Length: 270
Image 1 (cartoon, rainbow, N blue to C red):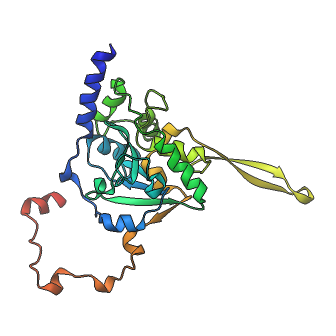
Image 2 (image 1 turned 90 degrees about the horizontal axis):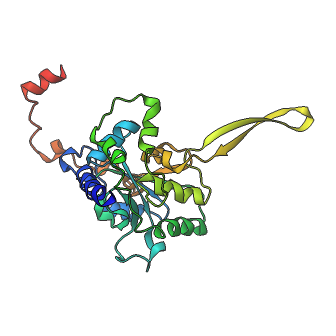
Image 3 (image 1 turned 180 degrees about the vertical axis):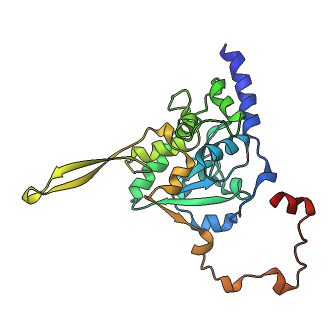
């Protein structure tokens, strides 16, 4: 049965993961700026265009559909290609390393964990490097087929669970699951479940204490790194000494104005 299901699953995965460049809508950061700004342990969020990406963006109500971990020089000598600086879990290729150029034509965002030591960063990198080659379970056709409908009619409270559906095998990681496992291994919070406990304090006064519980790795999505209170959002353009006075506007250069919208577009907006 596996010999029948696996080729079907592989074909379905390739169909779902096929990029559609015409759907790019955001502003892309040049690779050189990303390279100058990224540090080992940073999470790079990507606004993808594939069918899987469209479904994830709808289910999470976010622009971000993919996440990769920047390993930089901490993985030097351990990757087949020294130009590869990111490690990610891909629905077709499994856990793999890729160069920054892979996402130079897509909108990205850098999420940086705060307060990590050099040892912490090395542990993060070691975790993902040791899982290179792990694959997605393409035999699970139902798990893949959920992405055939990019906007499934499910209630909001069930959307995160819908993304988490899968074989449950930790060696068959996908997207943010791998990175969530890596941060859980060093006990760094992303979006933990918070429990509040009332405890007796000095002079019989009670105080409220926060107890954090790590969520299961399968429940994390790329959006969680963006909204987490424990990650800093780093913008390469701003970090690169941005000065709005140096911008070149079209009207200043004598460039022709953007043509007016077609009548059909005006009617549609009205």
